[in-house]
Image (cartoon, rainbow over all chains, first blue to last red; front, side, top):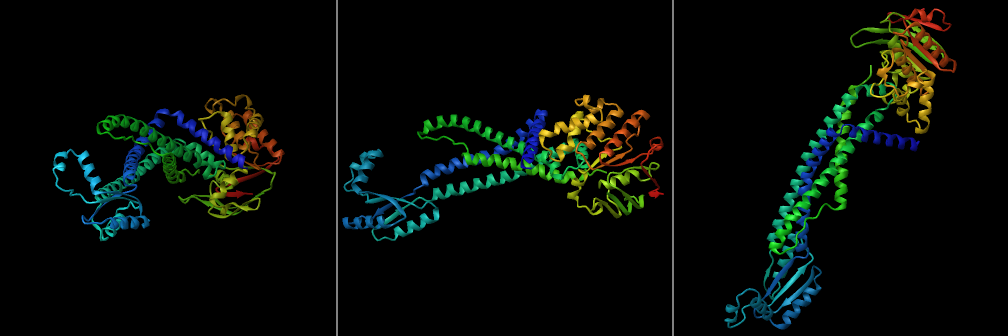
Length: 303
Length: 217
């Protein structure tokens, strides 16, 4: 029974492939159309993923600067260190004494003339703190808590850029969602029409099959396979388009990265995202075919 | 056994094709259905395969009421029946072999046995040498025989033929009648609608004649 079922499905699968190949230009064109339509939201999604992984690297353990009051004593510093070690939200911290800070300033900023002319060190002692939190809201809470410690003059934490990036990513995800929805509807419409034409040309076969005892699911099956296979091929095409686009963009990025002295390479979709893309596109094709079959098959009732 | 009880069929345009039909066909019986065109022969045959549904009355085939069959059950009824259509209903996009294969594909037959069954059916109607031919290349008589092969390949218990000798020469027609008789001899219930009086002249089988939608006794 199961074997008969499997051979039946295997038969329909190969029959569908044969049908796709028998009209190569038409099949190829609709696969390319689907591939291009899918590659648009996929492309933006890939950019978003890369952007959020960059922001994840920096914002992964956000950093705050604690500037202590100028008249601070050694035991106060020890007390702060102890407090930080007890705080579970703080991953690590680093103490920078006012002397070290001045030394660093002299070395790095080309202000040697000015700094050497200083009578006394104007810089405060400071801590650089790495925290566990990385959502803007929680970071803000932590900042407020540390600001209230008596030894602290000022906690500097630039959360604005993370918030901006976060908002940008949110907007990007929304755009991806919107494009995906719109283009999915377009793909379903394309498949609907393709299957409608197929049903029209196979009218005789459908009618005769019904007359000699074919169930509706038997008649539906080749069309659903057709939709799913063409959808899958469209998804694969979108994936290939992305591969080529990423390769081309990475070549351009190498020059840019050399000029700005940082390492940036776009990553392709992860394996699980790739599989999701293929499954989703196959499902879209199947759905378009299913709707088309449902709305056209009942019209072919033998008399 | 096929039983009609008070069966009427009125089409949507108001035309009454069958009017209060009562009849019984025993299983294994061979029955002729005659009458002028428009007498309701085709309609009666179509009611048996649930291609048309009756307006009123009950039709039972081996205890099952066809008049109230659910849509999903109709395919399984049709698989018990071999139907030879007046207009053949052959598929012209595939060869003789594949035309006969279709009923077996539909009812999920095992792939290993189908080729043998198709060839056996083609052999019975004398088309074995033409299995690769396309239907368009066949003569009228050959098409008719192809249609018969397709109707019997899945070994139905009921064989229905609507004007099977319609446009054929008398010798061809006799050939085809001999085929039906041999199917009947192996236990198949056979119903043949025809207006061809020459076929009925020396038959020993029951003849039902329809006149304006009623059975004439």
